Length: 163
Image (cartoon, rainbow, N blue to C red):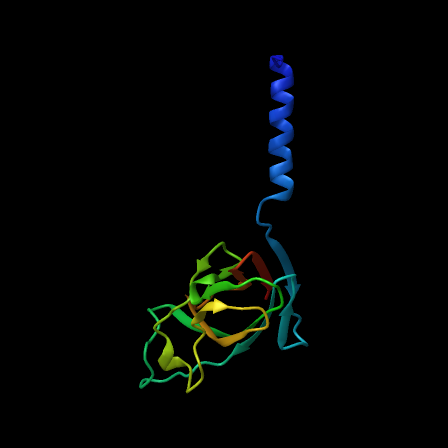
């Protein structure tokens, strides 16, 4: 039996629609606003629970590295918990910081001297269900930047925390 061209197109569209609804990895996005009265910011989604707190970094002439002229370092103590049922790989480069002027900043991996003995967020190659990863994520931003949001994009989730 030969299919008419319109029937073949309808069958093809049904297959594409079925695959797009059922077979792809979904990405959850959660937005949590951090109010002035609450120092801890928590965002949840179906896979990874994200908690962040702004931290004070070490400063002074004997601290390394130093920011570029006109810039400063900001840090966030981050804790991630795998609340899902999948294994993930997460890293320090899963974070981005944005300001209200449209600037996008990525972690400064060489910022260990700014942490005052605290642990830097390095991520883990095997983040299994129930695992917890934590550490401080450091960014270099302009002195006058008004920070807007901190985003974690790891695994199959994206969490945006409004600052």
